[in-house]
Amino acid sequence: MKTKRSKSNPSTVRPPAPKYQPNAREQIALRKHIARRNADTAPRLKVLDDEIRVDHPDRAVGNSLLMEALGTGDFTFYAGLLLQLANAGATGYQIQEQDLNFMLSVVKGAKPRDQFETMLAAQMAAIHIATMTFARRLRHVENIPQQDSAERALNKLARTYAAQLEALKRYRTGGEQKVTVQHVSVSDGGQAIVGNVTRAPAETAPEKTAEARPAIIESQQQTPITMTSEPAREPAPIQRGRKGDGRSSA
Image 1 (cartoon, rainbow, N blue to C red):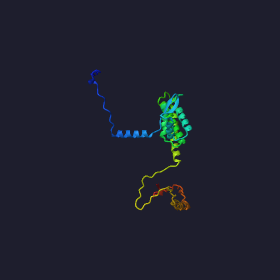
Image 2 (image 1 turned 180 degrees about the horizontal axis):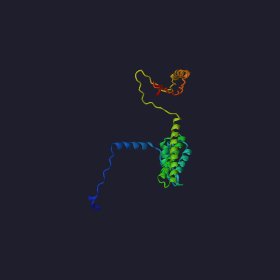
Image 3 (image 1 turned 90 degrees about the vertical axis):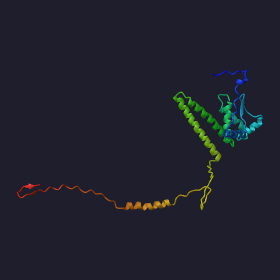
Image 4 (image 1 turned 135 degrees about the horizontal axis):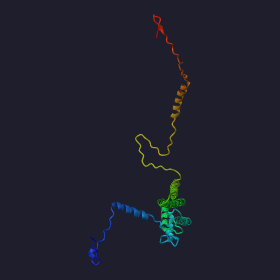
């Protein structure tokens, strides 16, 4: 049976729970999180009266930090990109501050080096939001036509995102594939070659073909053996001998 605590009697009030002490593994994760958060100097955006503003005490400094994170020094490009992100994440005609900052975080996380990478990262952020929207619709379909429509759209969006990610990788590497050798073991008397190695075609293949060719010709020059069937023999008549009494016997 529970007893009611009296407000006038402080002895019945429970003491506050002790503060949680994170263990060693949790402390390491917290330190990494704080270091990563401090390394991100780009500010967020806030929406006031349908106006996009940088969330920083000094607007000029905040815009400069955000432009640096987006890999551009052109303010016209910067302002146009923020407007496009806001429209892509808007609900109707209302700009959603949370979705805008999410898309901005995706672009910043890609660490673009120029405006082309920034635009591609912005498209990837928009495609991701659309993908998750149709994933939610597929989860709440009510009939087969709705299911087919949401499934087709979700499949196309997911493929588009994968193609965009591959395009970003190719653009950054210049279309070349880099191979990094971290460890090479060479035994005594051996040599290590660093560089492009092209293997020449085997020279023994034509010789084997030439050696096998006469055997085929020789088999073709042999006299063919004709199989003849022996003609059917007629049954020999049965000769009956005669006994001394003149009667025939078989």
